[in-house]
Length: 298
Image 1 (cartoon, rainbow, N blue to C red):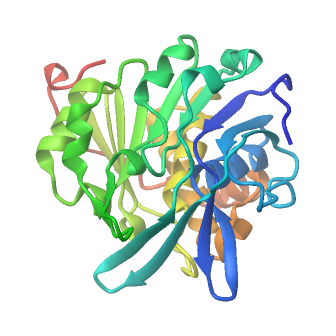
Image 2: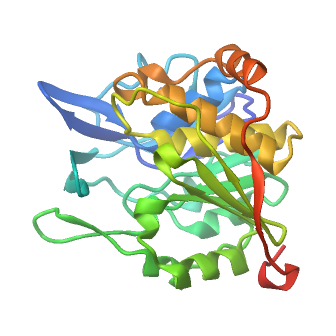
């Protein structure tokens, strides 16, 4: 389905994915989890993606405007979660998405999230949206894979990229893998850097300060996509005028609900998130270590 002229307020760009699950496949990728989050939080949402003709995402992504670029292949991952972390293989990968693929009408979207999963888009796409609140989920720019599809995570790849025009980036503590040099690079080149930390919450680096928020306790069933849910919810609340601490708390609560059901089924509606926050108003968001403003580019 292609609706490039539909008015939207939240645009997500990246590959739709098939995730291997027992008995078949499930729809995945940043665009799936982040797009559904923005939609369930009430923003008219569009997804620009590329995938093969053998999947039909309309049922899962009902209510979201889709612009699907043609491909013979669909990016496909097989994930295994072990005590030592996620083991991942890339079984198939679709073609890239370029600036020429972005519908003209969607270039006016006020919120944009770049969601690469396999190096399929470039950070320079942010230049198409000079007036937008533009964010990026970094996982897809850290991935490399060998001839057999075995995926490795290399945070140092981020230090080769320009993030001009991108205001917010998110990545997980597991993905960063203790690479302080890469974290410092991001803080120098992006106004807001968010490090998600699973059951320990999230840390926000913004305006020369560091904030940490504790999470909402959750009964984890499936952690897939939690970082994408967080990224979308965080951008939504920044767009709506919330402070960084308020937005991070809201995003943490939203992501915590999402992991309590398989796949994207647990992504909550806005009223569910707000009800929980109303009953737990403090949020645990406290300033951590003060940093000098000169250490952070704004």
